[in-house]
Image (cartoon, rainbow, N blue to C red; front, side, top):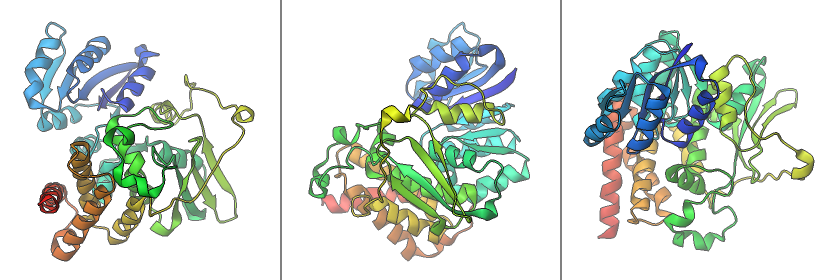
Length: 390
């Protein structure tokens, strides 16, 4: 039996991972499950899968989790330190699906243990790509991509030489507002931004899709994971979400990875790697589908893409600044403190402030510096929101 842990078990990626495990439970020994505020679901899954430990990120929910798992034999814990402790438990394979920068520390701890980290948390590489890759190498650990786009690139590169790669193209659905007139975007509501045309995801990632901040993070992640230069990475808007990524080679050939929009493709590939096993996903019928559309993204509609390219060129701690400012700006949009377009404006203002600070953004890429930068960037977002409101 393979020992596995799932960080972010109650989210959509975590639940899809559990769905695959439930289909072959005799093959897996579940070490740790972690979640946020959905205590009922976390406890239900921990009981059914007979996990060694269940952890909630919220310390004030520890008693609720303890009550929900009373008599089960499952150990309980809460808080950021407990997440890191759970990551230190020996496991063969760990899913990192915690949303946001909170996934960085547990992910690094898994790599220090020399395990396999299936990475659905794009912020880990955005905030500290070089640190993460160095940690994996130093501990003979393995990093597998689970974002659908990066999994697609990873699969298209099997048997290929990276020196032959000319370009990597990741696709984007375009989100909820891909067909909206530009003059309406300033008035877009939280509810409208939370409705994705193709994917069934959580609210935050769905809003990030509408602003294309998710794709901006994926641009940076592509650079870090595959070691390519920013000018080798392209984005195409692809409304059908069938082609997840393409890799172009120096002989003019282009390899595309295609599949129905179902995250179990990428999760299953990482779970069974290096084997390719059967998955309970829809099979493509291209004749029925009829057409696949592609277009270049309009950066006036999606300014996050322009900001991501600036971050890739800047390097250092700018990824941590970008991600933290994005996360906090999203918080303020969901709270209805700012408008939809103001998210990108505020992120750019925070990046400019860090640029002006010079040494802050040029500090060494260490975990402490990433965490301090993350905190400061969030504070600056709040300062800017207050200033603009006043």
